[in-house]
Amino acid sequence: MRGRKPSPFRLRVLDGTQSRPTRDVSQPRPEAKPPTCPQHLSPSAKAEWKRLVHELYDLGILTNLDRSTLAAYCQSYGRWVEAEQKLKETPALLKMPSGYVQQNPWLTISSKQLELMHRYLGELGLSPVARARVSTGRRRPARPWRPADAFLK
Image 1 (tube, rainbow, N blue to C red):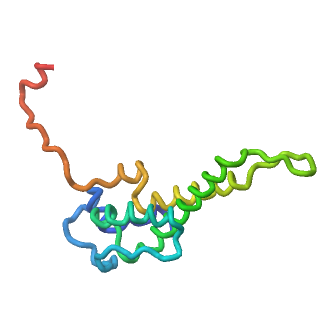
Image 2 (image 1 turned 120 degrees about the vertical axis):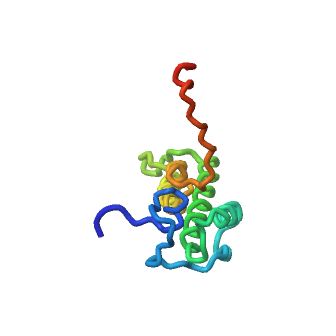
């Protein structure tokens, strides 16, 4: 498939790019309830899940079908936290028995998890750039234009 990925109807409505107020009937409408936390997540991943799930659900972005995407993000977050904790305990460069200096494996794990988190942040609308594209529809009231405004500046 070429071109941009199509965005879900709810995101287009929040973004203000939906030209007609009617629903898009071609897109599936999943059941509106927050997903349950998977049991296999690490403790730090579960904490991240609890932090995000209700906020995303209240915005209307998260449904039960998005459980695996959010779980993958949270697991990446948990692994990143673990790698960062290990990096505090060990140096970034390790001297091997052969005498060569090698990058700490925890640094590689941390970098890879940050990459994965970045991907999921965009999918879930959690990065600053993704949030800039989505608005909740609450706008400040426009100030009425007065002819004298141009002269008062």
